[in-house]
Image (cartoon, rainbow, N blue to C red; front, side, top):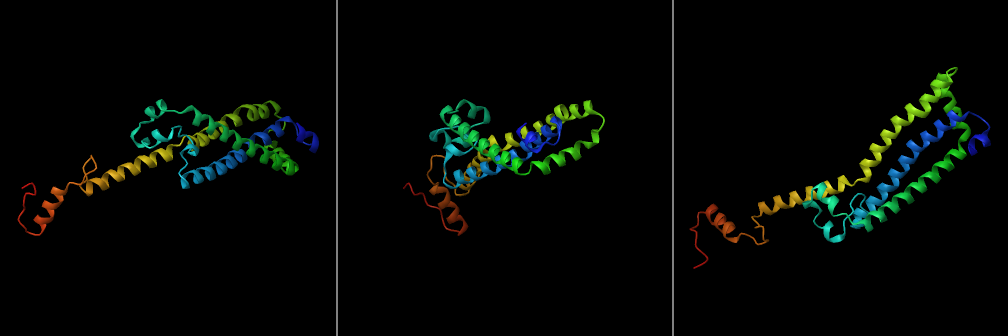
Length: 205
């Protein structure tokens, strides 16, 4: 409403189209960028509390690779959850302020673009209203939900921890390390002597 009065151009549908488009495309892009920076910082300095979608305390986070996704839900630390929620609200607020500034600085260009796009509905006000208020928001809200859900739920971090665990287990198997952490010296010794044609000797004697 403020921008419409300031520019004195365009109708309510056209300005709604501008505002909604900026919310979907610009706000999502900026929040994704800031979120990515925070995730990189958390990964670099091993700050588990900043890993989006991972609501575990330090003890449980050490064993994240053992949990299924259902089990993770039972180990939620709500203190960490609300800290991440607060961080997300801060990110979103920063993005909204930046987008408002961009809209304010480029209002004339954006409303002209919106009028040209919605010009296809000229003479069909009801159809224009239906598209702007129903069809367009439904499609873009679905896209926004999918994108934000993808980068907020922390699946990549969890899956990476699981892959690292599987790789570590394979390395342990290759080194003949027993599950209790001791090396199977007898097996390694026997294979070593067998490869070189040496008689095997029982070390217990």
